[in-house]
Image (cartoon, rainbow, N blue to C red; front, side, top):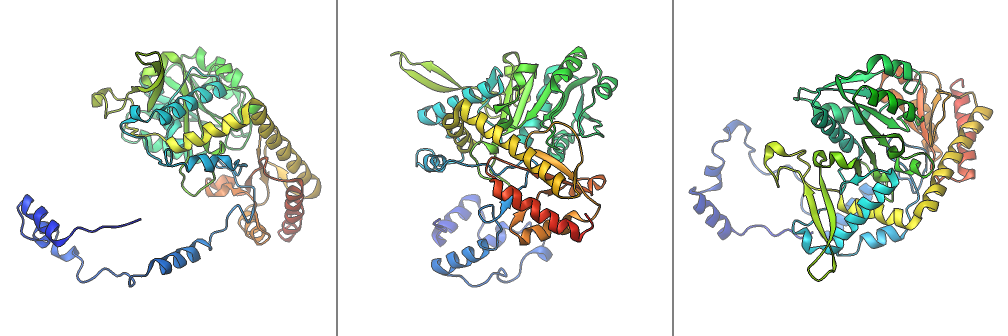
Amino acid sequence: MKYTPHTEEEKREMLARIGVSSLSELFSQIPEKILLKGDLPLPPSLSEFEVRKLVKAIGEKNETTDEFINFLGGGVYDHIIPAVIPHILQRSEYYTAYTPYQAEVSQGTLQTIFEFQSLICELFNMEIANASMYDGASALAEGCLMAVAIKKKKKILLADSLNPLYKMVIETYLEGTEIEPVYLPTPKGRIELDILEKIVDPSFSAVVVQNPNFFGILEPVKEMATIIHKNDCLFLLSCDPISLGIILPPGDYGADIAVGEGQSLGIPPSFGGPYLGLFTTKKEFIRFMPGRLVGKTIDRDGNPGYVLTLQTREQHIKRERATSNICTNSALCALAATIYLSLLGKRGLREVASQCLHKAHYLLERIEEETNFRRAFPLPFFKEFVLKGKKGIWPKILKDLREKKIFGGVHLGRFNEDWEDLLLVAVTEKRTKEELDFFVSALKEIGARYGM
């Protein structure tokens, strides 16, 4: 990237325009004692070749999923990405993470967003999908605000089986508001209907659930929907879009707002994103929805055209009437998901989901046959499961597994001290039988060193 600094003449013109004679006068309000004296403590400048060499050397310190067998999950997954996706994304007419501000001029971008919305609606079996959000966590937090705006009740009920990072994002969103989050305990790994019935009442705006939940377990969503709606609450659901290849979509069991993380749909895992928030709802709630919506119409000659139809954000309407301060969408990531879903179709997505399911169950069965590790929750699961070990051993085991080029999973003790003995393992369609068997043998060998 080129950097063109201001010339001395330009600096003098700017300073003269604002009525100061020098940079030191411009910064005169800054206390003398905190001003930097002398030069910045930076190394000497390097040539382009030297910078490339340095950055490459730093990058090579990374341990990546290209070199390691990856069983990490907990919200970000190592799925196969067809080569055509990055090929199309890098076309110059698409290659920006930012939505064009004069979007009606960019008919191609608007059409891809319209197709994205249509595909997500079909996948979730919901009536409306917006043009995407930042990620799954922000989508869920925005869903909480939307539910409170609809029901005008200041309490929401959050399942304890939600992703802990999602809970942190929700709590951050709610900080400074009058909305009170209440947690629904899930001591056995998923929601129990009798506990839900005891806690939920009409004072809540919504019940917030993840399915499959953070432990990979399928929640009893159909039965829950009846209880939730009987108490005049909205059913707010976060789901893994890949799972919808083989399990019922949220619209089939009455979800009012359904969101998800779209990273699994053709977007590579990366540290901190960018990711893709999926957001859907019922038509009756469309004006409470955050973000933006692209619609399809015809021009005066009868040709199809695409337009930004709904943008209830503060840049376009009165601030107090805005539903959100979300100012853009993840357009390039939404395009990746659109290509992914278009390529795979219903049968392809079902195949991916089915392989995740069967490979995850194969791995757990082999681990329980060959090692002393056992599943923590004997409940139906999709592509993730929780292994129970001994307190204090998982960080050591994960380190030993890395020496065999295996990312063995996510130690749940980092989220909760009560989960010190738990490891979350994710299996996608990308893992081969040889890799699964190698993981079992490595876990057996290393586990024995630690008394397992």
